[in-house]
Amino acid sequence: MTSQAHDQPAVVATALPAPHSSMPSIGSLVRRPEVGSLIGMIAVLVFFSIFGGANFMSAGGAASWLNVASELGIIALPVGLLMIAGHLDLSVGSMIPASSMTIAIISGHYDQPIIVGILAALGLGLAVGFINGVLVIRTKVPSFVVTLATLFALAGLTLGLSIILSGSTSVALKSGPIAKLVLGDYLGGKFQVTLFWWIAIVLIVGFILNFSRFGNWILAMGGDAVSARNAGIPTDRVTIALFMSSGLCAAFVGMSQAILYNSAQVAAGQSFIFNSIIAVVIGGVLLTGGYGSVVGIVLGTLTFSIVNQGIFYTGFDANWASLIIGVLLLAAVLMNNTFRTMALTYAPRTKSRVR
Amino acid sequence: MTTPLLRLTGINKSFGPIDVLHDISLEVNRGEVLCLLGDNGAGKSTLIKILSGVHRPTSGTMEMDGKAVAFDSPRDASDHGIATVHQFGGTFPLMSIGRSFFVGAEPTRRWGPLTIYDRKRANEIAVTEMRQLGITRIDDGDRLVGGLSGGERQALAIARAVHFGASVLILDEPTAALGVKEAAHVLRIVLQARRKGIAVIFITHNVVHALTVGDHFAVLIRGAKAADFRKGEKSREAITDLMAGGEQMAELEAEIESFSAADDRQAPRDASHA
Image (tube, rainbow over all chains, first blue to last red; front, side):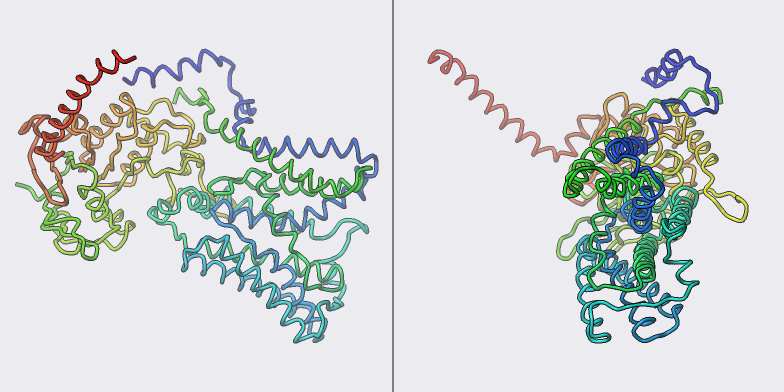
């Protein structure tokens, strides 16, 4: 009965006699499910280069979508990790204005040193993430519902406290040159410094997911939480840590926005809820968890930002951008499914058969 | 006689007012396959859950190597060398073979100042362990588990248990979802595990599979042990009868016979009308 199992490699060997070098073969490329996201990104880039004219490809044009991508990307990465682990975080939408208002009220309204405001804003992000994580673990309520609740609770808290403390829904913030340079300024008049933070976070998250044990735990939890726990993974601690990281990153974006724009508004940031999910899903992360990659999330973020900003460089009415994003989202998910299936059914290489 | 590796004495389990297991006593020896037979709802799953640390028995004792043990969690049970492989292998379909093999026990290596997951070593060990169980088709640990067949996934899970030094291997209906060839391969793997001196507890309601690999059989009926016998002591028909509750099966057969007799009488009449 094992004859079939024995024969199969032999058949493959005769079908693919080409010697294997260290170059990635087409087969191994197709096995990388980010291919779908890459094709999507190239497609929108080509589309908008053609219809957006020279302006879209200029430094200024690139800066416009890279800036959007950097803020979205900083949030999409930890949200993507959470999604890989089988959770969602909607509360980022309130976390951004909450942290903006925190730093503006502390360092603007009350004139405290900027570092106090920064630490308070980031601390708030960690605290909200911790609360999200503990609620999800303790109540066993799906994280969609838990973070939807904290989304609204935090929005209400931000609005209420802002009115009580500052009497306004918009607070001005003046920050020193160092804080500006590090957290909220344009380099060369065009590129936001958040771009560098995004790159740094990409490297960190990429390391965590691909090269650390923690990354393997995240994948396992999203694949099968019960088996993961039985295998000895501290699933509760991992969940809390992931929610804290998404809270922290959302707080970071809110804080840097306040420094960049020299003010904070109560009603900013709601667009990040869906935009972060869209970027992550376009990037090939499975909404139900267990699968995804950092390269994919980065590509998804870029794709989203190119469409979102590129539309302004074309002759089209900007109202069409959402239609394109909707269609793109669906197309991307279908393409990602196809590539995931190909990755699953890809026949083994014959190189190491001698061993 | 040597002390059995695992001995259950008078295990009872009730959930609230419902008694699920009554007075179960079993012995499992090294290098032996104990087949746990029973119809759906006979209490097999509950018994496995007690053995693997998910539930604690209401009363009764468990001993390993003559020493009393009580498991607080599945993790605790696996620390005692009890590994449970569920019907679908308990593996992660979208993870690579190497990664899922080492979930929770990833090998690491130094990389500059950092400690990183050693993908190459994980893949090599996983592929080697699977080859030892006769899965020769797999030579790339980067392949996704979801691309394996059902039998190969079972093999992966069993290879994992063997690698991490399990002394008792609980297989929960490993052949139920498999085709004939695949099931035969899994049975062969079970025998290989037995040869390594592992005590295997094989849960199934397929009498043929049980008779192929079993050394020792226990039949559960409605939470109680109805029979306990060794290889060759009972015929296949006798075991099937026992599992289904003998008399009930005979009644059912009689009933079916009367139905089909009625059909036979009706059929020609319908034909003449048409």
